[in-house]
Length: 325
Ligand code: AVJ
Image (cartoon, rainbow, N blue to C red; front, side, top):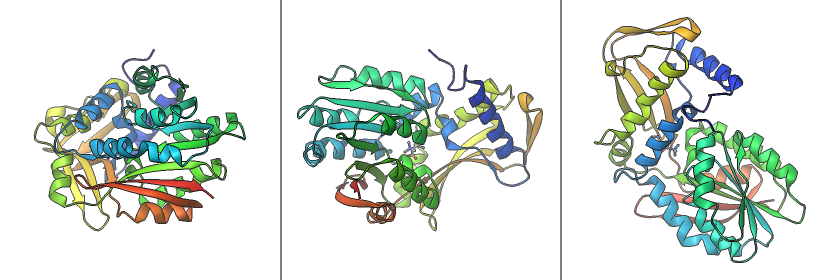
């Protein structure tokens, strides 16, 4: 079992991390790091904590919708159905769907995640469900999905879940491309459930991404600790602060790590010195917000047929169900 980080014991992942960090921090322009590196073990636990913050309604809205409509969704799919999920996280939301399906017929569930810690938590959370066999797949999304689809039997329908508005971390054209990549791996009649956080007033979004307890700040700054630990860097966390910015034109929330004053940090494993001006930032995440018709538009373009959409009113969020054409 891996403990300290997702790259421990996976040298090829460490190389990729090193290359991404060099590309993101080594040049003269806007410094940036890919958001997926926020999720080491501590980062995953901090995101889990974020999902309990009153200001961050996203995860609870997602779960409310799934819980309220799981049976309706299950009834639309002709068994036998196998379930796969991209980025399973704790698996708390998926319970409702698996229960609804397993009432009709025993089912297999393939959580796909690059974090073995997340997969373990998910197996514990959902392993006890009657008539559900959990088969964790430690891989990236498309690699894992390819594994699932190459194993599936032709009489089985695949129900693919992509919840939590994780798609919000993709630039809009990348999201479109990604849906195409997903669709290319599915067969006609397969189902796809996509969760998207919806546009809402900027004040609510800024509070959600810069909470007064500082949990999101810890989640963001933890990325520097990861650089210190895994790449032998010497970032002084006290010299940085978390910032959330609403980009009205792009309809997205960006997270930055901002240098409080001019200084430099060393990343020994890369033999790289990183200079910061006062106020200069590392851009660590974008969280795109959608209009309710947008997921339907991009899914249609990727050869999916819309089969239903459910929204939460308390925290505007949409769950859209599609069938592969
Ligand atoms: C897990 C990607 C959906 O973008 O809202 C939470 C991650 N970032 N707070 C999001 C996150 C800051 C989250 N997603």
